[in-house]
Each structure stands twice: as C-alpha cells, then as structure tokens.
Image (cartoon, rainbow, N blue to C red; front, side, top):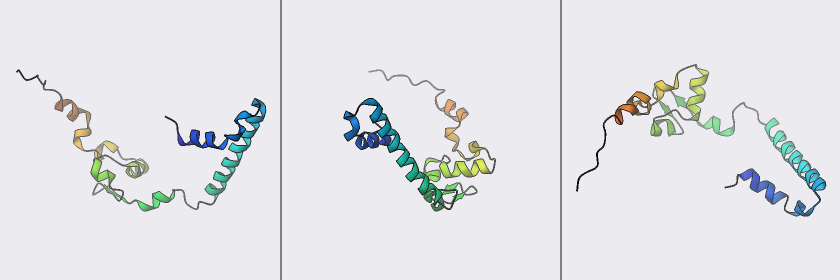
Length: 118
C-alpha cells in the first residue's frame, strides 16, 4: 500500500530515476522545495484559522448534533465536536453513547456464550 505523497513523488521523478545519486538528490530537493513553496503560498492566502470545510459544520452540544451528521449517526463526537469540546474544556465521555463506555462494554460481555449442542 502506498500513500498519495509516495505516488506523487514516484510520478514526478520518473524521468530523473536514471540520474546519478547526487543529481537525483538535487532533483528531489528542488522538487520538494517547489511543492513546499506552492503550498506555502496557498496557505498564506488563507484568511481564516479553519480550512474551508470548517466553515460548513455547526456543532450543537445541547442537542448532541453536528451538521456533518457523524455526531448523531455514530453517537460519538466527530472531529468538529472534539474541537468544540476541547476549546470548552469539556469531557468527551459525556457526549458518547453509553455503550461506548468501558463499564457498559464489559457488562455486555460478562455472560458467557456457550456453543449450541447438536
């Protein structure tokens, strides 16, 4: 399994693979510098602390909901809810469905399951 960055680098250095080691390293250094410079420029133009997706989600702790839908569906805090909980210095455990809590999970498995006789 390869990551997207590994695939991008492999594609970008396809022609440079036959170069001697030192020239290949120079090529790779220049390539990474160009990528970092491009991404830095993009980041500098961002006018908010949040990425674009951060603007699209609304968390309501009273109703235990998030506009992304994951908080309600999974009954666990989604990434946006975790951010709100952390900023408000609240305990995430209060916003998790009770079956995710250790004591309830242990109670689920406290009774043995015996195989059925034929």
